[in-house]
Length: 221
Image (cartoon, rainbow, N blue to C red):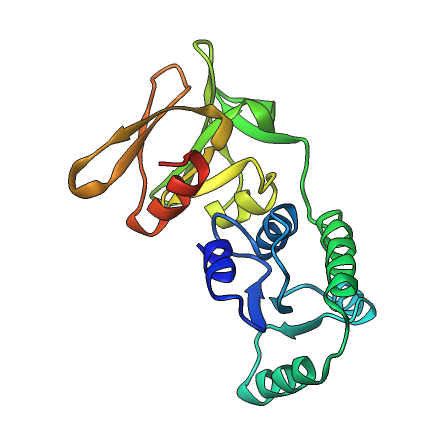
C-alpha cells in the first residue's frame, strides 16, 4: 500500500517505520528502487541503536529515534526542506543504507523448534507458517512429511524479526506465513480471502482485512 501511495501521489517527503508488519521500511525502499520510481526524501523512524543511527547520519538520511516528540519531527521536516541532494545521489545513498542495515538484522538460517521432547533446527525455507494461541507459538513445516513444533519466541513479532522479511508475511495478527508455501488463495465471504498452505494438513489461514491489499499486490488479484 505504501509503495502504491508513493507512486500515485509523488510526495516530497515520506516517513517510514523501519519495522512495519508485512513489508518493512527497507522493503518499501527496495520496491521503489526496483520499479525505478523517483524517490522522495526519506525520514526513517527507528528503534535501532546508536551505531545504526550514525549510519543514517553518514548517509545523509534523517531519522527519528523512538520514542520521538513533535519538536524532533519538526526538526526533521526542516532538515528535509533544506536538503539539496540530487535525486540520483539520494537513491545511491538509500540503496547503500538498505544493504548495510539489512546485514545488521538478527536473522538466522535456522529456527529452533521443540517437538516431542526433542529440539529440532529447521531451515527457514521449510517453514510453512507460524501461529500464536494463548501465548504459545506453533510453527508448521511444509510438505506431506512436515512437522509441527513450538518456538521459544514470546511473540510473533519476535519470531518475525529473526526471519527473512522478503519470505515471510504477517497475513493476520495471529499468523505468519511463508509466501512461497502458499498453495492456494481461497475467496471467502465479503471479499475476504483464506490461504491454503503447503503443510500436511493443508491448513487454511485467514487474511485480515488490513492485509487484503498486500495479498492483491503479491499475487496480482
